[in-house]
Length: 210
Length: 255
Image (cartoon, rainbow over all chains, first blue to last red; front, side, top):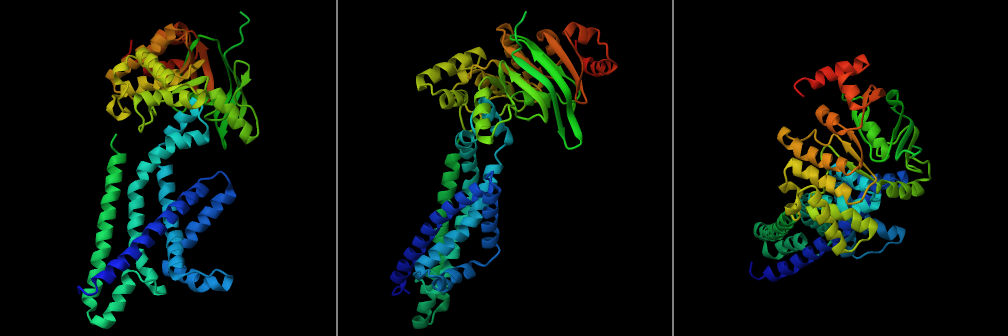
């Protein structure tokens, strides 16, 4: 057990990197997706809606496989880590699109009316009135997305990225202790989730202060 | 008197599909006039009010603010710029206050002047102080909306609208959402504005207030102005049966 621990820590670092990078990508995709879905342009709305329904309608594992195994066929050659990170990011981005869109449209319509009546433009209203309120509303549900993302990183074990789950599988071969290996991996996932969850709660409390 | 009206509504009509909410309404309001619009719910009075700053666009007819047509037909982008500048001259107060909950009282008041008129922080602060003094809430300048009573919220909302130095103020049932004991403080602020000769158009259910403060009263029902005149006439001696019926129901217990 002690012998393998350093390798697990190394693997946890990879899981963490995967989580953080795909989370950032997801937030960018989510913001763009939400902007598209709420746009005045029907074309952009369609693009946004298609992105969301395609991603949410297919297994994340298939998305990872398509990018990693299918990519080279159309000239996209990616390392396993890169493919996994991108696929996870695009995947969680679709869920984050819906989270952000939901938060934005749940800001009271009267807020928009009040700002527009004062003479603020659509954009000024969004920036100064709608968005700050929507940000507060989206912290917790984005936390739920991030929670799912962290656990979802386990999927990239399937393309041999040496992260926590893959590492656990690998050391079963030499230790013959599947229970311990998976238990250890699970405990590390839980630690990451626990710390992240508290971070989200802290942010949420801070934002809701007033 | 050859003064052109400050607000001129010409043959306003609005329909949602087959449902006509406004049917050919014309209304001129002179500078400094205070007009009350009364009528049963669903009569179109709020819709008419919200047409004045094009919050609820008309299907036909024109709205003019002095020599500017508010609901001008323009390409989207130009219209946006046009309406944003027009709206700076038309203050509006809502039934549900619509204060910005993430901003304190000072920021609620200074947000639009800062963003739209580019005034400095010191000038903005001065403006907030001046407007809050007017509504008697200077001691609440650093409070958040959630820390205020309904009446206080509405007074801040009035101060926020006034900070843009509008030419006209629109009140959309400003006291309807308030507890009865909080109505008076808002009415007092509105009376004070009346004394300062602010042009006001007031949609209200408060017959007593309309009677005391307004120069003219419009009674609307089913999308038309049924009767219009000075409050003495409308309240004491209405000509139309629909007006009589409405007032009978609404004056009970008042006066």
